[in-house]
Image (cartoon, rainbow, N blue to C red; front, side, top):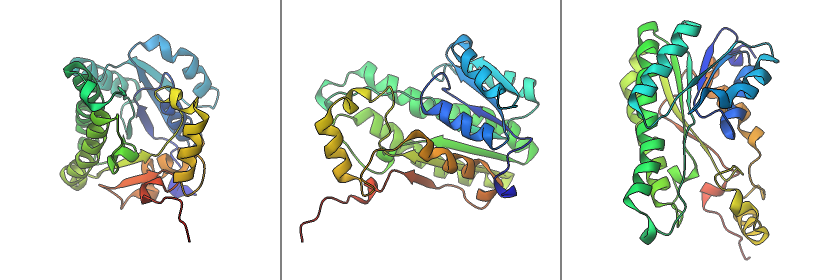
Length: 258
């Protein structure tokens, strides 16, 4: 189990005011990591910060808008000043605009791609400078099953997540020689605030479960072991990879008739 012990490590998780970002932070904290958390407003992390501190971990919260380059630089500098280092980055902050392709506006595209793809790159770049100087780092880009599969109504989102997969491989090749691994954790269909409206439709949920070999949507704690693995020494020889945690939906399996 020492391979998965994160005691003494510092993890920066973006987008921790709600949703999967909080689950990633909890999992890393339970494995021993101190947690730096971000949101567009520092105050929105206050309650969650107390929760993580109750686990016996040090915390730091700062404002970070991944669409603002100066905000990224400032947030990373603040975390490094508070903790002295960033060992682990979880690039979680993201957004989605769900529309038929013919209705997507220029602004919709820019919002989604700038947040999910450009924001992830420049946050990784800012954190990697210190990692490279120290010769150690774990960068985990959060993708989705749309890294490898296309879905109607998700053109900008799918483009951004496909880009995350390619970005992960490029950065892994760039920074591997410096002791920094870069991987993509790609959840399947998990209920979040972004897609809650879909899960309110019982017929859609049944249709979805029929397509998932494990016959259920993901539960957020299904991601715990994966994020700890990618953040730990257990994955020291894993880089440039996309780890799908999706119940098997990316196999493309459908109900067979024999």
